[in-house]
Amino acid sequence: MADSKYGKYVISKKVTKPEPYPTMEWIGDIDYDTNMTFMITKVVAPCRMEESPHSHDFDMYLHFVSYDYNNMDELFGEIVIGLGEEQEMHTFTKPTSVYIPAGMVHCPLVFKRVDKPIILFHTSIASKYVKKEEPFK
Image (cartoon, rainbow, N blue to C red; front, side):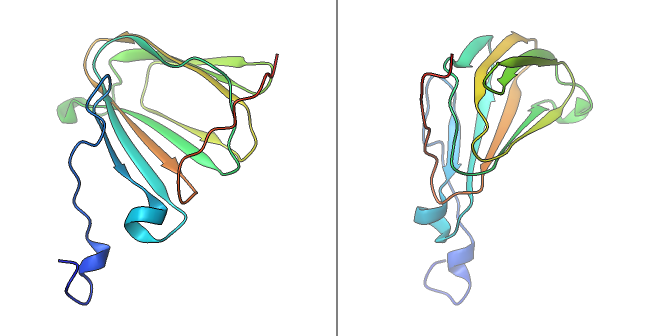
């Protein structure tokens, strides 16, 4: 479609990272020539997705929703995320969105319980995803 007038705005993807969490990525500087990057990841089992606290130079949003479209009001799991340099821990069991302003330290990110698959929509206001890993504590 890219050879048509508006085809460059329609971008199909396949899974770009198959293991351990199947992920599809639309990267701003590659796919759109913009400052927006999306990652969609399917989580099917408990895991520590991100171990170390880190930050970014851009705003980021993490959206956690059920893969079960018949029960989208449920999460079917328990997720814990650390926010701030002091790693204030937040636990949720319902569909949730977490806003992480540019420069905010965050993680670990732990999927403690996964009863049914969970989808993580990761949205970065950036042309590409870059982590700043520093010793915070």
